[in-house]
Length: 401
Image 1 (cartoon, rainbow, N blue to C red):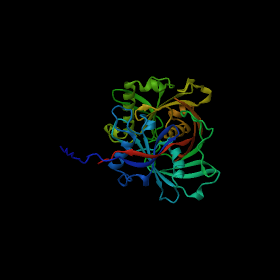
Image 2: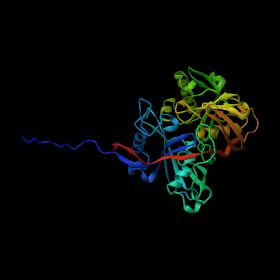
Image 3: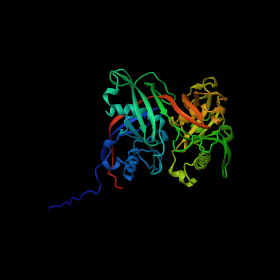
Image 4: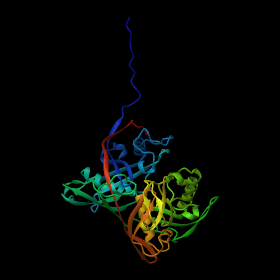
């Protein structure tokens, strides 16, 4: 007896593979792509690009684990970066950042990631996107980065040894376990060009949130749109860690409501309902005067080490350290007398400050000026580190959009 087997063509297509590099930058990590390595349909903005990046990271995931992707199930590790050679004569590369939502099918392109900014210069050099005559055999390569999300310039000073990017070193960054080589980053004129630094014209004002309360706030556009509150008005000491805030669902809902109403007040959205599609901005943070506390690593931080304490939320959760762009906002607000941040630092002039966050401390600086009663920030400076964790290809199922 002859048995005939019918072979049916599978409706499932094989996975596609895309060249990618998994990098840590500052206290974040993400999947980096050279734009030309992406599938053609994903090289420009649109549904195809978002769908591929969501699948790469493993979102949306109702389990909030991103087990089936490269994401790490936190706002700091659910990130993507696309880099390309710049067509601007005074810049080397264009840098586009996508913050991938964990539980929702959503990629937020509205802002920058300051931490991953520190990895862009090194990635560009590794990818051959920087002219060789701009890379010293020993010293620092100055990489001129156009931040395409917010149309701003970032200057990265990448250490070079024997003609290659130096990744190992003794620079320690609280929130990162192991030391690495130091990368200095300059954020040039980091305030939002479309809006005044203080969008309502006030350094401090009252923000009313229906059903929750009225709070003194400083709302600022610098680095990233951020709303600052006093810790004590929220019922906090100001030294709280992630476990206190992130385990309290009512507190997180309260913070999100404050963030949504602040977004309307700052002119970032027209109605609070739009806040769900713009989760990356504004950031929300609370400040308190310098005080002793124990960091998440168990290190004792004394009030003599810092100017003040800051705790900030990103994508609805308290950040384990501090977002780089929020650090720019912190440095700028600290430099301007009369803001909540400057008040927490004891007032006065602060071109450079050292603030406490859940993982330890961070030193940042800002150069500000006042012209015709308007505050401007010329430059913000901080040090970070970055290194390649893995490189090769990511694989995703063929996606139809």
